[in-house]
Image (cartoon, rainbow, N blue to C red; front, side, top):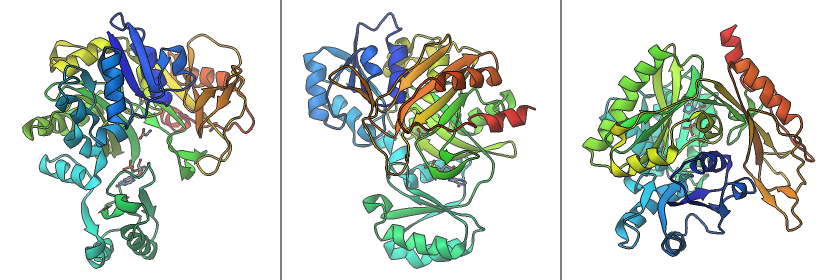
Length: 428
Ligand code: AMP
Ligand code: GLY
């Protein structure tokens, strides 16, 4: 079949690499893609949020499966558009409809969903400009640090963790008065959870599910988890502390009630659920839901999938995921992200990239790259390229990944040198 994958990051390059391995994939289109996805299929200059244009392309090119990488088109209702347009309703869409996508699109909705289904999460309340005084009073009942979350999508910047009460109160007022535009018209205030974070990925058809490999990502720009938040500076899969016992708790207390909750609320959900968790002394708590795969978690999770991903997606779309099982490579994958100098603040694009030599068991996934007319590879974003290595152990995977990273160069290239170090420490 012909498949259209929406998105342009490292996540999409890693998904594309698996889609083209499938015997069911005839032609893969990626919109808009990057220089890496261009080697996997045909990049198409479409805006994933222009549903009419995406729909026209799908009809003209006889696309049978639409895989949605990022959250924005899902939150805006691309799956609904396909389901409700007669000429598109036959297309298998991987990604939930608008109602399901609210699990990521509205933090307040997600928290209320967790509360309804008794899913462990931090205690919270939601406030608007009209209830600012009540919000400030609620802050007084909590202990430092204070967690403030813009209700809507804020490009990953809408969560503030405040060390003291006065700053938390001041920032609550700023958020409610439009700091993140309409995304912070409502603000969730919640208890701070202390522990180690982990990302759990579920593929569900709305009734059945498969648990994909877990991963850990590294969000801060600086070594030792310091400095500003980024899209993610590296990832590792599996996560050593996510052992059988811990994952059983995750499945029983979180995954099962989440999928059951979606079904009981008659929410048509066919796609990924990415659960951001905190391991608090051996007990998992949900920090957030996302309705897509993570980036750069996908770059360490997808290389480990040995099952035919297109078959999994077909069963997801048809509601028969119970007929599938997952075949996972037991090796460890470690992904190190290389970014533009200055990222996540101001940075330049258009730097010439040299890729160095390929080595066995290491893949480069492109994030922000493009090919110039003369064929040169150029930087085209903050996160530029990542290297994922597979090996029997985490130390070996990290060693190989860093060996590869050392050969990739452009003016201003930066990467963290401590990806996976916290996990190594737990292992020693
Ligand atoms: P989110 O966008 O909800 O994933 O939040 C961004 C980051 O803020 C998370 O990855 C956590 O590191 C942190 N965070 C969010 N909520 C909490 C919480 N309740 N307690 C501690 N850290 C949190
Ligand atoms: N790596 C975190 C995310 O994709 O949201």
